Amino acid sequence: MDAGDGGAVNGGSEGERRPRVVVVGAGFAGLWAVQRLRREPVDVLLLDRQNYHTFLPLLYQVAAAELGPTDIAYPVRSILRDQKNATFRMAEVVEVDLEHSEVVTPVERIPYDHLILGMGATTHYFGVEGAEEYAFPLRTMDEAIPLRHHVLSRFEEAAYEADAEHRQRLLTFAIVGAGPTGVEFSGALSELIYGPLQKDFPMIDMATVRILLIEAMDGVLQGMPAELSDYARDRLERRKVELKMGSAVARVGPDWVEIEGGERIGTETIVWTGGVRGAQGPRDWGLPVTRSGQIEVERTLAVPGRPGVWAAGDLAYLEEDGEPLPGVAPVALQQGTLAADNIMRQIRGEEPKAFHYRDPGMLAVIGRNAAVARLGGRNFKGFPAWVVWLVVHVAKLIGFRNRVLVLVNWAWNYLFFERAVRLILPFARRSAGDRPRPERPRPLPRGGGSGEPVGEEGVAADEPRGG
Image (cartoon, rainbow, N blue to C red; front, side, top):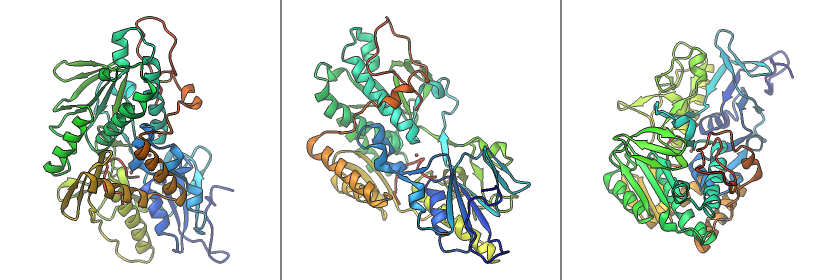
């Protein structure tokens, strides 16, 4: 297959070439754009570094050993199997040649008539010293699985650690950022520790375990009404999560995190959920980007001054009512669909439409029987919000098998307070040592391995969960 073919299917008669739409990124924005073009007279090629789509709103549950990776991931080729005008290529885009309208991968140059960039975003550390080197991000499957391995390994090591100071560092877990991901992961981690792990490790005094949620702002879930934010805060505290609000992280080290003002907390586990930024590529390719690396787009999602190029999801920067649109799944879904719509309008010679976000609401779960929801202008909390959260997330999962697996795992966890995926896998252990870890106070064999680099969110909630 040569570069000119691009892997697309030509549905026209001999000698005719249908417009080729190349979509980069199999997240919510990219996947919904491709599916919107299902019955259109265009050839579509979807590119992604992974061969699966990840349901980001439940990624934190993989890191907290509540769900397995295959419960929330679905093969892209299976999704597109019945879409005759679309093909998939597992490849990383290394350049977009705007002059020649080509997407460049390590093995080929792929021409396009229209290009939708939906690669999502990466973790933003806000220039905090040591954060990128020592903290665990939580945005992709490649990050969630090693984080789960790391957390479980801390308990395996603490089970026989004689040095009290080091044991305390092993059993201290700091989560930075009190948005939905930080809140949900804190609650899930608490249920893991004070549920299954408490039974697994009777030799560990669980009173010494610390889970800290650190936030530079004054409260949790800042985008939600005060009533819901206060409820989430109360439920986290009941689950023994220590809240450090109004506490910006100043520095991160191999076995500590320092709060502005000088407080230093000893810990070998810092999970960073505090922000996102665009990938480096668009800046290098000559596209207009913001300071945070997002692509500046027009209301139609077209990239100004770059004919045929569109951006959607977390990678696109667009304001509404004077505020940037949040990096949530509903935004990505709606933008991916509109970008595809506007491509077809342009092909037909019609005026493209402007993007207007239809907010379906917000959801966040704190743990068993506890969630908050803002839907239809009304606030819900507690068990009713938790049920809504369950229904919405299961309904949005791709694939019947995934829905069944998630429901079975949740039912098992709910009825028996167990988590069946508390596995420290060999492939995860092999990556240990890639991430610098703290020096031990004295040489001892490590229990289960040490840290490693740390796998991608209408779901109406969460944050960097677009695409």
